[in-house]
Length: 177
Image (cartoon, rainbow, N blue to C red):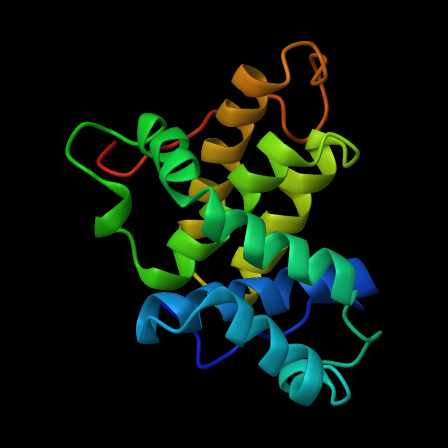
């Protein structure tokens, strides 16, 4: 079930706020078909001077935000294929709820294109974003899909143990009981 809007579970850094804003931007792009460049300009010019959706915290990092929105949009087919490969055969990326799809696209993009950001950070950040929007099992799905992608894309970076370890948090994919 989707909440009315994001509610923070902790204070957001500029990078966390950029990820949250990027999810909102990809949602807007998916909903309206507006270009990524237009959405980036709108957010940077009109939304970043205000608190993002009444969330206390730092101003979103505009550089990270721009890279996430433009990069995930430009590489959409690639990230959709990666995410789709982590879903069950009965679910496609297009079947996912738009906010969930945006979260997974951005997480997959960061895992593919942002080797400067540790995989565990990417997973944790997007699970936190999912928790801001959803009350149900969606954050667990985000954890499972991004953990599986990190293990495929960044072989060796995720050592056994820790919160993203599939032995302690096995991924539950859509369609699994």
